Length: 130
Image (cartoon, rainbow, N blue to C red; front, side, top):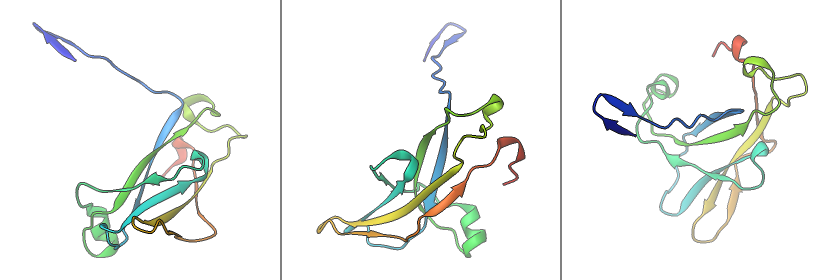
């Protein structure tokens, strides 16, 4: 981006046919010896590493009784099977399965959070109520 006189020049990189999901979890563990990851079925075999949030979230204080800095990551998902206005077509699989993993940095031992995996069902954007 550059400024020349009163004209501002910028480059816009718009990305179509995808959406972002922020995964957050609060889990008290030893950051010096463990890392936390998430496995998401729609993203293949490579787990995503979660990082500590930069700040505390007000909604966590309301839900859990105190503000916290959760572990989180943002996953980009393809939305290439959709109709107009980003609404999912009938053949689109609207389920995302995932689970969290703790991996020991020293031994490489992996502990999966749970089986069966957690599941998210995506809703049509126009009918989503939060």
